[in-house]
Length: 370
Image (cartoon, rainbow, N blue to C red):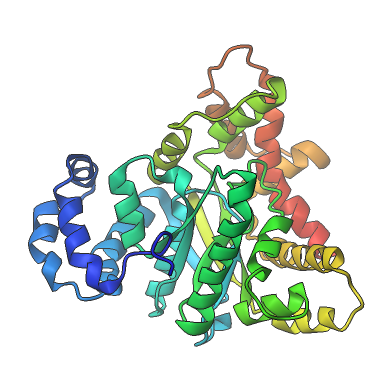
């Protein structure tokens, strides 16, 4: 029923691994990762009886290496809020690849099962990428649909997520909106909440969300290696309303995010919002008001659990405060600005956008705690 979007099943692991290991592009990428031996993976592929076996044997060491290489420290807080029931981890979105990968690393480190991952098919730039992410428990979110295709696709996706959580008891990761936040404002997309509610049989949006057991989850990156790429995109959209990303732009962002320095990273798992949803259900709200209230609830939860780093405090001070001195933060952002070389470059605009990216988490946390 869901063959067009589901991840690979346990029984498909060996054949997909053999196919990957014989793909020249995958072999080239894997060869650049210390400790990864493609021929060894190929020779042992038939021994993996489940997707989790593969993730523990191959992906966990890979992600540990990635975390050690690209971050000073990866931590997780709120793990006590994770229950034995399947959950929907709805998170802010900073990095195409690292966000879902590190969610699962945090879960595996705490001896929990990995979650399934929602990923847009716009990222399937090469066949081996599609194979690899589907082998990593990713299911497909279809993009670039016609208006006629969109509604049926949303219902199909909503049904799959509900089926995965309520019947298969598998947790799911999703970003709170389509695409990464470019300025770190991290606001939940109303259309996402509407989509999640489409497959339920309840009498209201809130009734349909409760079985999904939503746990807002907060990523806090000290540094975003894609910050200058996001600034470029904001610049292009500001000066050219007809601007559209090229087919390889997301691939460049994936590579930059994987290879770049993130500094310290914390992932905070909040409690389920179900008690507050039950409370909202008693209020006389129409569908639009319910959707807005749920989005605001998720946003406040995500914002209140940011970890604030010195660069956030310094950037906030430059825009809203006493403009205090922090040479390390200033030099970092100047270095990122220096990476930008585009036609008709407006450095004042770019600098302001870079400051906003790092100031907004503190700004939103202060607002959420009022």
